[in-house]
Image (cartoon, rainbow over all chains, first blue to last red; front, side, top):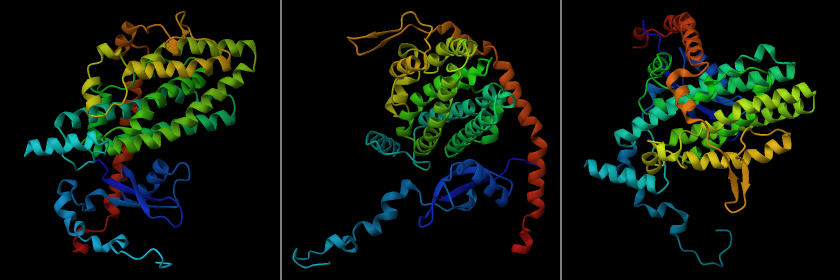
Length: 94
Length: 313
């Protein structure tokens, strides 16, 4: 029987009001142990108030090598940004 | 096509942007990184041993708690770095096997013995100090996961260095015997600490390509000089001397001149001839083998409690 524990990706919420952010990975036999190991490896100095662990195999990622075509749909839509619209300087609160 | 990929890689590195795990990268870049990061990870893991020796003999509960926290940090640093190697396709189990079979190296500094409790302080001050000198520039290394691991590590190393220096200040305020113990420890660790930066630039085979790929940011000799410049005033404040008759301020260069470490000794230790080489690897092997039943039991427990595949279908 293979004893290599599966790989988990770890996400930590630094404090209330912030998103969970990816901090690294670790090996653990199951989700509960992954959480405990994540606490010991990634939050020894109050770096987090909440941890997510996700099996690395369950993550679907876009590839950086496909960057240009994949993100092209947003590239030419400058009208999505507020700076696209010229408003006279003297109009307040806009 | 391959040329396009290579060009894009070169451009990303030149622009000081980071290479990320799924980017195309030259085979040599990947191999060099795996070798360097694994060696670094192994150093953190083996590095637990010299100081771990003193946990049960620390002179007070305060020192014991500090030393435990520090050694636990070293384990954590090893894990951040192993995690970074896995983003390059390395296998954790394989790296551990290579370490305990002596096929991958770790920093030679950990093959020196810790003879007195003063060594705990000197390791924090000089060995971790040299490690910080090496590691701060690596926070800007071109491979993203490595750079991010180094940022976390550098934040934590600062505690390591300060606790060591504070320990030594305490001993220097003690008895003459304690002061002698500190000086003796400094005498034994100074040269090995200087060797931590690696061989002189003229003999360093990996430096040039690693600098071009921005894996390495400064040469061995540049970092060694920086470390000497930083350490001399710290030694003066502490009231100890370094065992180097050639060490003196050079007004013209605006830096300290210093002697050359014994490179024959360096290569001898690298090749396995240090005082503790065998002991360190044997201890790591024993810990790994003694832990096998825990890994098996935890895996069996997880398999038993996993939701059945059929039920989920």
